[in-house]
Length: 449
Image (cartoon, rainbow, N blue to C red; front, side):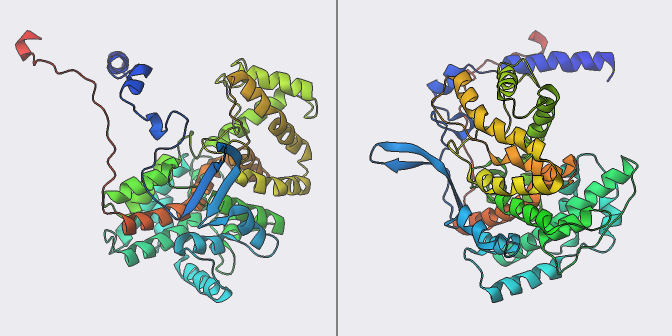
């Protein structure tokens, strides 16, 4: 920017800060639920859903008590669902059926559903060349969002919000999403990183997780354990209640009458934020920093000392946060992290990464107590799913640029279910209120300013 332009921007930013900064007591005065959370951190209720339940407390005779984290998809616990398919079959498509249609599929229903998915497993002719490979970006989330909006141009009924058409659109977007994700990365890697370019078509006989690995890797090869762990990761990230930021964005945008392509693109914009879908990247950066300062993962004294430095804002990014620890809802445990952990060690063993795993294992044990001591907070803290997911993706040789897009590859199922539920159950636009605290002002004529 020109110097005078830079000065103008800097001055106007200072004006914005002066005009738009509110004292905390103003929020209390007007009983504003900042961040749509109440004083105890519980979300403000804005709707009803049957898609999933997320909870970290239960009611007892002594009132509300913290409990092990609860995550249910359509009433089924995530533990029961994952135990039902792990080491027997890939589960993503089966759980997708449950999330979208509300019941567990029979073998016949699942086979029919997979055949529908297979029919959808193709992009428009020349779309990869004409859209994905044009204007490649290092921000893969932005690339995918652009491609989703472009797909609307190929849909003669793009603006039709009838239920059957929306379901058709959602199924198509879910199915082609892995292709958009992987191909966008390959375009970035070729045009920006000057690496070799290769495009593998998906194999209709494979699961979503298997196809993701097949399309990503130059040799299309993967182990059964790798595919199993990725499939599990997709299931665990598929849905997490209506109150998370991107799902709420889905429902807000749906309530305005917008089309499926615009709704999913809006959800993508929400998810890409580092406070939401990008959290596991911060965990990875933090763990790399910890390993560079603590040589032995089993040296608990040294590990404790360095974690205290992080909390004291003397180390890492000096934000005072141990990333991957704590959650807005879960306190004692995040059920997704609990399910994930058993396979993390298995994968670390296969990949020769047990030393790295030990850092995660020990930090998970000691960090919650350190955090509670620093915050002087009686509320428990636990590892969340992001604490492990980045490590898993790293062991699967998935590039960091794909961590958040991979999250979206799973979460689009939940977005679709909530979009459909919003269309069926509500015809009201979501319109929360803001309190205007600016006093009336007398207009000053131009010549007197």
